[in-house]
Image (tube, rainbow, N blue to C red; front, top):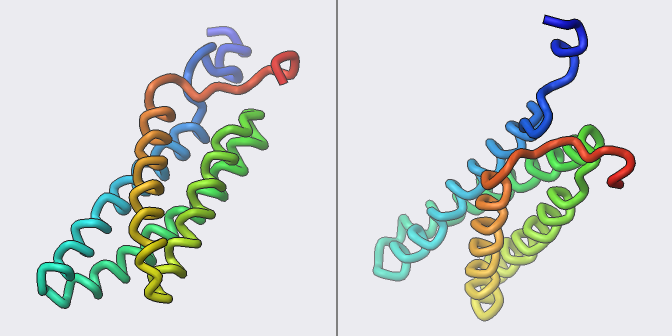
Length: 140
């Protein structure tokens, strides 16, 4: 093996920070899909569902903020801004939705929740459909 083969990853392969980003996005999706289930439990009369929904909101929000940090690292290391921009849009919507839920503004909370879940699923598909590689300076 040549020395430069050990230093540079193969062209077209996802870098370690890309794998971390994929993992965080996957955890984010897994946590957010439970939210409508917990809300549905509450709406069918299981009042413990509201507690699960509130706990789930805290988990989803925390993972979202962790995703922002990983997206910043990904942007700095791989010169890819789209994960940061997409993550910020989703996390901003989640934050508004979180406070709308706390304030009882269901007219905003429910439709924004549906849009947030859809956006996060699209992001999940996008990060898993191809390699997350470093953008070369000439491409930037």
